[in-house]
Image 1 (cartoon, helix red, strand yellow):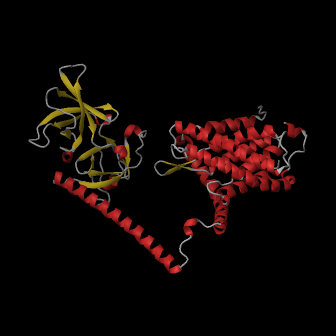
Image 2: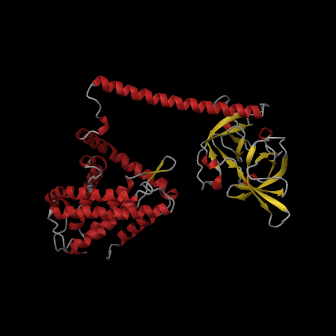
Image 3: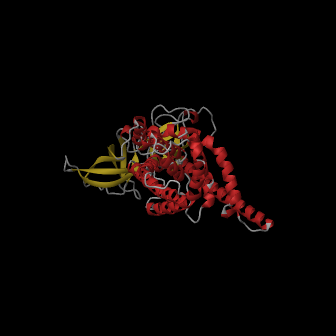
Length: 187
Length: 287
């Protein structure tokens, strides 16, 4: 996989996720682009490249997600999104042998599922930090509604994933993925 | 799942380790790194926000169609917020005037000046309850000055070596203040009969003293300062209240009273200091 292409796609995803995709929100459900990119990379890149991509994506999303802390300060924690992305990658990489990666519907639905798995890691990481005394980025006692919002976001992400994965499939040649069955792909 | 890439395994473990590190260890660095990243991403994100707002304006932007009515509503909201701000300021000034008057009536000698001090870091973990104040020697604050709340409630003493713009407040109940001579006021409403006691900190911000078992000490009674080593202007001020009176374990014929400080400094945003030092810039923030 060509790193500059992935970095460009990652930056586009983080910009659209943080500043634009709210325009597609219906009710409380808003789509996210990063699970679609993560699914596309995990299904096409070599395994080491997919792992590194998930790690880099998680770290970047953590760095742009400050959390308000008591006293009017903000804190930045590298971990919740990183763990979430690594969990999602750990789910997606073994599935690449059984998914029709050229089927936009399959990739879109899997992107929604990956967002749910990412959210499990995200909640787990913040809950662990909450036990250590850090503030958690949801209202205490409202974790159920926060997870329900994640479910609706996953549905919206699956819908967005269909056209986006189709578009990504059109530019697959730019990414420089290894050919099917190559040694690098099987590492 | 087998991860053959050793550098990746190290990086992932490092990320997992950082994810559980307390923010006081890595928080500052991460906030700086995050600031750099967001500074690079903010300009294109702002353009995207503008496009998003153009495509789908926020609901609250949709006011009445009539521009005159829209302008009237805007002016109404502006003056309403100004009225609330002015009202809050008046209430704050009234509170300060009342406090200053009470302190002056209690000690008319005038050998001091009052300095308002904003409370900085006051987290329970910060220096075992010591509170940082955002005022210092520039305004005449000296080591050993007393901090007061609501006229005659003692919050604590200024710690050693205050800086020019900052100082520390050692709260009542902190072991750093040592033993404190005080009086339990047995008859606050009547003759003001007092029982002299010596207070010592026993942890968790509480104080304790020996008392005569049948001396009339009861929970709820006020404890006032009577210690020659404290500033003259602080004598007679309220240190705390008697929380409980019991039999002393080692000497069953004597009693032991537990005293709770009347002020919990960890909940304060501002205290008034009776400053006895020389001010570097006379007049500012003093009354």
